[in-house]
Amino acid sequence: MNEMSWPPQVPPPPPSPMPPPMPVGFSGSRSDFFHLVKRGAGLEFVTLGFYRFWLLTDIRRHLWANTLVDGDAAEYTGRGKELLIGFLVAMAILVPVYLAYFLAGLEAEHIQAFASIPLVAFFYIFGQFAIYRARRYRLTRTVWRGVRFWMSGSGWKYALYASLWGLLSAVTLGLALPWRTAALERYKMRHSFYGDLQGSFEGRGWEFFKRGWWLWLLAPIAFVVYPIAPFIYGAFKAIEWRWWLSGIRFGDVRLESSLPKSALIGLYWKVIGWIVVLGLVFSVYLALAAALVASMSGDAFTEFFTSQEFARSIPLLVLMGVGYLVFALAMNIVIRVYLSRDLWVRVLGSVNISGIEAAANVAARGEMANALGEGFADGLDVGGF
Image (cartoon, rainbow, N blue to C red; front, side, top):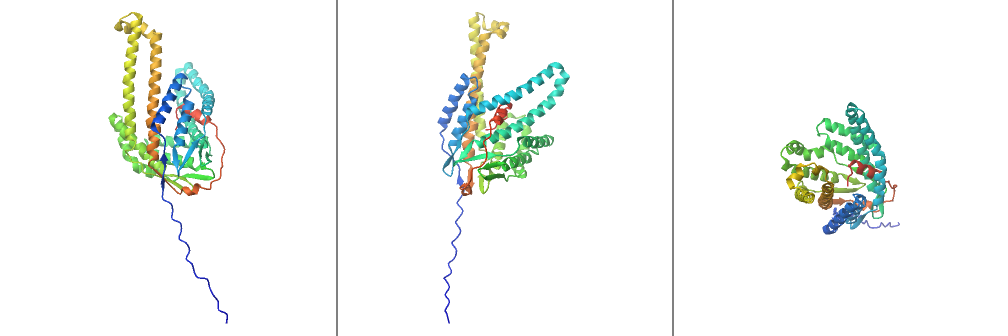
């Protein structure tokens, strides 16, 4: 009788433990960013604002390059020249629309009143189109570990979708805003990709509403009691950032944010404080400029202001124009430092990423998008960062 032997039973190896969520890091220096925007503001002054396309590119490149995910930094490959060309093409389309409306207003006052309704509707829809196309441009200029993000979908379909939701939000006095935001984010993320890894958005409007419904009740009070407005707006933006980030997915890659409601309030108060200080400095400058021009004209200070020469004084107008430009550029520095760099760092510090190993074997896909969307967004002043 043959004796049969069986190999010993070896238990299967235990499954590999899931790696813990990893935080997103930021390595950039605040002083380096300040010098970047300060230098950019000076070049904007010399070029009468046209350098902003290169400055915006440098800002994005700085923030992207210092954002670390799993130890690797992102890369922004956009160019200032692309933004300038996109802006000029957009202006070639938008300026005739403005001109047609102006000529209609000269024709008859009732035509101007009638034309304002479709004009506002046109620019709102066009603005939503620009927002979508600008996002597509920024994604296709964002690279991580050698793989490019990209975006598909129709900008016009998104614009129609956003406009219908916007109408519903207006009818409901803002109550439908959380559901509008969730629906639009689902559309954008469904058409967003990292290589061949498709994005999705799991945030729900009801979750957003539950977190911020009390702010909707307090919003009317902020129009009367102005000092509470930064608290309400700062808390709302923190809730929105946390809800939005926690809903982002790329395949099995998940983001989770723990941003507190009070995290951004201080930033908005600092911006308000700097605007007040800069406004006071600008007021003193205007008074000194007026006194200087009055002394040069040989008139007394009070006589100069009561005469017609005050309104026709070319030196005073030049000094006022230069002062206003410096004031506006200084405010831009403040806003870029606090609401671009500091907000970016504070929000990133709250983010943890799970399932990053799903992005290890991603194949490159997608095509580059042109900067026309950014140009439209800049021309309509609806550009996001």
